[in-house]
Amino acid sequence: MHHVQHRSVSIIGLLMLMSVVLFFGSLFWMFSGQHMFLVQIPAVLLSFGLLLVTGMLYVINPPKQMGAVLLTLIFFTLDMTVRQGLVQGGGADAQSVVKGLIGVFLFGFGLFNGLRKVFAHPILGLFFIYAGYACLSATYSSTVLLGLGSGLTLLGIVFVAAKASTEDREGLQRLWMYIYIATVVAAVVSLAMLAFIPLYARDLADPGSFRLRGITGSANSLGPMVAVGFLISRMMARWAPTRGKRWMHYFFGAALAAALILTNSRASLLGLSGALLLSFFIVNQMSIIGVLLILMAGTMALAVALQPDLLKSVMGLVADLFSRSGSVQELTTLTGRSSIWEACWGLIKEKPLFGYGLGSVRVEIPKVFYDQYGNSAATAHNFVLESLISVGLVGTVPLVMLLVAVTAGLWRYVGKGVKDHGLDAHDSGMALCAFQVMTMFWIQSLVERVFSGTASPSAVCLGLCVATSVYLLRNKPRALRHNKSGLYTAHSPLRSA
Image (cartoon, rainbow, N blue to C red; front, side, top):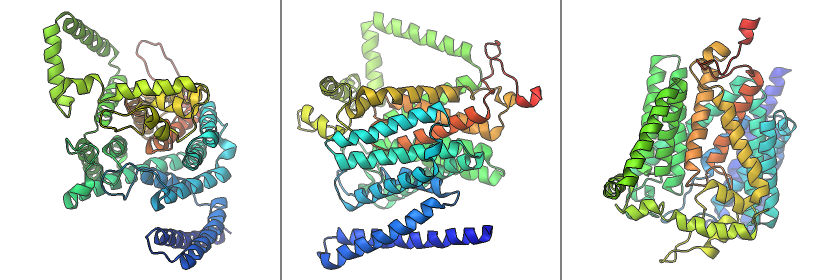
């Protein structure tokens, strides 16, 4: 019986794959500029019908890898672009339609396989409430189709996260592995583009300096993806059973780090550095050193405040290190973000409760903000402002509660004594990596939208961190972060037995 079921799933999967190829092929043909609509439209409709039938059969009876594959596919494609030149994104072109269809398919899979599990834990419930309202807000958005497609994708991420967090560890590890593979592919392909087609690989939105955008729409999109991959590569190296595989992950980590440096994404670089530094202090129980460092930083800040000439010298040095133009004003205005934030507050005051709807930011901000050259912005460059404009206070409150709950939940499992409290190398590795990802995105969220707004690779990573946190809280509820002072105490279930 098992072999018959496995064979039927494989046959349906093969038919679905053929339907996907036919549908996307006919879709790109229709958008290619060859005006043969009498042939193209029936081909698109017929292949879509085949895809719908085989897809529904496959979603109802999927293999174990299906959720991980779909989540990885949406992670990889959301910020991927084949547009040339100065990429501003959007529109009802073929690649946008393809991304929307992948998101809808992810939603359909999750609806059948993860809906009943979304309230298995309060964290999952918060995630579902936020994504559900975000999807609902698309009905009053100025970009209804974009908001609806993005909202369904967010719900799909919630459902897959709920499914993974309530099943065995193998499925959760598979999610981490597949996302890791996607980041490695993105980094390697982007570096290859830099070698063979450097002009195409460059982010032309910043002509003053070279920034690698690779396969994504901008350097600020590629940066967070490869930063996440670098963090996962460190976990994979620890898990590697042989020396050869460990060195393979070191090589991939080096490629990811190189791609990150070439993006010159300062938010990603600072976020990654901050996440590694904070986790280092926590894991090694260096609370006293942390306090001393804070006191030293405070002393330095006081000295700078009392000596204006010293402040000027320090700001000049920092500008030389971090400013692309060498201007101190670029840093004090956060590369113009302070003006964008001021304009965003004006929008929020008009509709504070419900916002303007998911996907509306790229339409609403240009109405109130533009610089002296007529340039505007498609994002608020801050996750709270982006969320308030998109879904208002009603949607932002559960999002912030979710982020705090996930970070706090993961913090419990990060520390030197986790092995004594029921966690093996794989559990502690996932906990540490997820905590580092969350910390990195918290830092980035000060100047980028990260978690909020339309679906993005960061939202997929949030789903992965949610799944990891819930899995640990459900299966290792008594494992607490070890503290030598005795502030936290716990007993392993194995010891108590």
